[in-house]
Length: 196
Image (cartoon, rainbow, N blue to C red):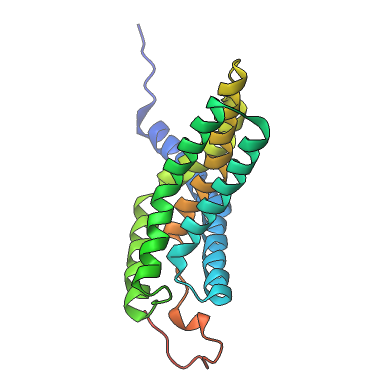
């Protein structure tokens, strides 16, 4: 009786394929999305002169406002009241973050804030690679697999899917993207000083 032994070469071949697929995902999916998120943060900071960390809660409130208007068009009575309660609960963390930023002075984004944001982004970029990819692929698959026969439940699930698709991947990539330098929001800046 002979047994087939695949040996070490087979395991090396499999690990090489896994490394090639990971490199491909990193090069053609993850890195371009990180670069796009960094560009969004830069444009937000230049156009609004607000700290880059306020982009994500602002976008979350915009999406929730859109969902509130849409739910008012298709729901009435108790389901509409439940959808308002759910949307308010989803909006509270973002609203709290924006109100605390307004109370703290709004546009205080200097060298210290840039360095701490950059350190957090580098840590998230290196440690949460798989989380970003999982959130990205689950947001792509969620609208296809979330089907409910009940019309009210289907509306709730559709709203939750839209909210997750529009905010989940963006949050993970904005958290890991390279933040803009504080001087990029200053139009009089001549490019002499660089932080970090």
